[in-house]
Structure formats: C-alpha cells, structure tokens
Image 1 (cartoon, rainbow, N blue to C red):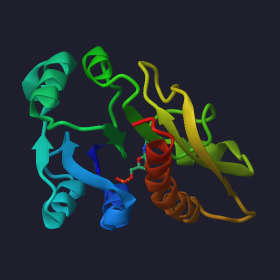
Image 2 (tube, rainbow, N blue to C red):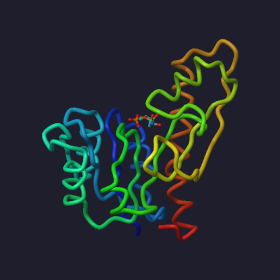
Image 3 (cartoon, rainbow, N blue to C red):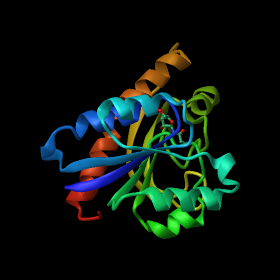
Image 4 (cartoon, rainbow, N blue to C red):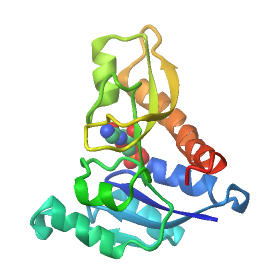
Length: 189
Ligand code: GAR
C-alpha cells in the first residue's frame, strides 16, 4: 500500500475523485492526509466526511512560505507521494527538497501551453481547438516540471466556457488517479 498526501485549496472535486478511485483496496493507495491552505474550502469538508485527516496551514499566520512549508513538513506522516490537486501555490525549496521527485501536480491545460491559475479560460479565450489536462512532476517553476501524463480535450464550435470546464474536470477525475497508479506500476514511488 502506498501512502499519499493530497494538497488542495478549493472545491476538491479532484480530491473526491481520488478518494473514490482509491476506495478500492486493489488500487493499493491510501490517502493519509489532506493539506489545505484555506480553512473554509469545500475540500476540507469532503476530507472530513471521508475520514481523511486534515492539516490546515495558514500561510499568512506562518509569516513566510518557508515557515508554512516547515509547518507542513512537521505535520506530514510518512508518505510516498504528494499530489497537488488544485493547490494554488508555487512550492518553495523546503518542500521540494524534502520530497525530491515525489510531488506531482494536476494542470487543466496541455502544458507547456497555458500555465498558471486560469489554464482553462486562457485556452478558451485564445481560441485553441484542442486543450486538455496534464499531470507533471513539480519543480521550482510555474507548471514547468517533467510531464507524466496528458489527455487532449477538443473544444467544439459554440461550446461555452462552462461546458469546457465540465469536460476538463471529467478528464482530470480519471487521468489523475490513473497517473498515480502508473507511477506505482513503474516503481517510481
Ligand atoms: C483543477 O481543475 C486543477 O487542474 C486546477 O484547479 C482545479 C481544482 O479543482 N489546478 C490548477 O489550475 C493549477 N495550476 P477541484 O478543487 O475541483 O479539484
């Protein structure tokens, strides 16, 4: 059994998808903890309902990113992988050094196109005909680490941004748990 930590900031639909996928013990993954930087985020309630321990971190109260990351590191149990699933912060050197090649991120566009916080809308407004979802290793840059998995999503004529968001999330909910399973199969974690 591999132990993972999920970091998320908001709604937590990907947390829910990971939790549903890994509820099957045959997948060999246990969600040990949720780390969240917003006490009132919907993902916190989802984790509590699922019985997943929650670590809340208030970056402002910690005073610096380094202090916040040291706090997170001090609270994390022994884990094999950190999955950033809608965690809206750039990681600093402390977390990266503590978990080398053990942190992956989900991004709602086909990197290296449309990095940053608004990947779905940026692709839509640019007018690309194909966007998608990326899972990648995290490095010190913004959505710049080595790509692990990608899935394209076509934007059809007349499609609304809301419809595209729904389509992207549906792909994310399958691609992310499958990417974790692939890493285990490959012996990467
Ligand atoms: C997801 O679409 C994820 O790809 C995105 O945040 C959303 C979180 O949704 N992440 C980024 O944009 C990172 N740059 P969720 O809270 O419903 O899982």
